[in-house]
Length: 464
Ligand code: 4AD
Ligand code: MG
Image 1: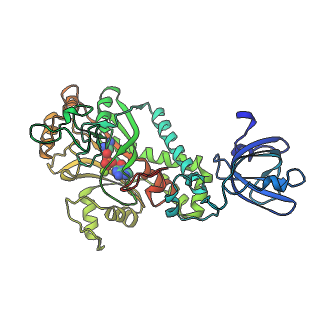
Image 2: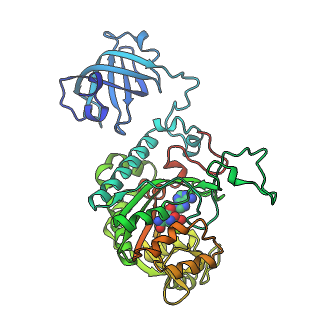
Image 3: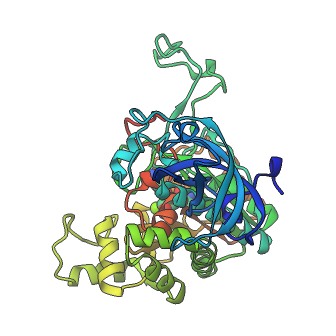
């Protein structure tokens, strides 16, 4: 058994009665009468609490006074069948040791049912709620399943740099990394900041994507994936955007866009199935408390074949829909989430993989189609979320790639190493990026991305 005889509450709840056990955790509630107290204890190993029954003939009422909601303690006693409904066993306490008290006047989580907005203001304490316990366990399970999935398929996990001199998405919304004195930066002859004196001798930023370095490794190891934090300084204060989010980016040599779509669909279905199998208690809690259709929706995605549709056809459907959109639709626009959700939730009623977008609205590295107008992009659009995956087949032709970089007014100075893959042993290849928190929005049924990451980074918010 675990450290100093302690067992996890998840394990205790499944154990046979009659044995002596020690559990440690945080008090969720205490109630009782003159003879006996009932303490609901949780240690985060499961959504369920274990009930500790304290008989005042064994442990005095006085000794139990500091045991209030939020306090941390050890309880040792006999595991017995519980007469109460909804719990198989409880502990008849022989001994209680209080580790840390929580003042009734100041501990913010006294009662249940706080709003998610309020909990965001106490992000340092919200892991102690049922809701965030469930979300954090599901987040862990999904991270584990991602590594499991790719490992089984022979993909290698690559660690790509977080500090970079290139802008992978060409989006230009990056966080600068510098050690220069911001009050008095050194100037060059043109009167501009002299970055040659900066730590790396050049301008650097936090990365928006590990893809470009991922491609380098795919052109050697065939199938790779990255899974790390990415950073975007775009000022989009929406329920689906974070300034710091985690992304999974597989990249595969010898895959065309169809192989890429097949992998994306299989991958997401695997993850949802994994959650249904391994996170049943937590999903049931979230289903009951927040979203009565959650589990049904998860089952339906696993069983449905995703629609595959060209952007041009998608735009036609939107134009003919007769729907009043806030942003008008025309060929060439970057679809807004209202458009994506119309296609997914109203028109097809299932996930949609939209392909072959206009090249102007997509990144420079996507493979150009022969029509000269579109590129071999693929976005996976999900109910309630909109875009969950963005990816493409990559442009493997050196000259065409250079042409696109020039069209986008980007500089080749910081990309020469990327271009080298197209000069030496280039090949057809593809990849995509799954936003980890967007996946978690879907799996947990939460509606605000700030609620599926422990400590969200959003505009004007880096407190915790
Ligand atoms: O579509 P994006 O920008 O694609 C890329 O970064 C490519 N380099 C991926 C690749 O092909 N390897 O981002 C990919 C996904 C989006 O579909 C979305 O799920 C998520 O990342 N995402 C965000 N999630 C939270 N907050 C943000 N600000 C996000 N921006 C993108
Ligand atoms: Mg995208």
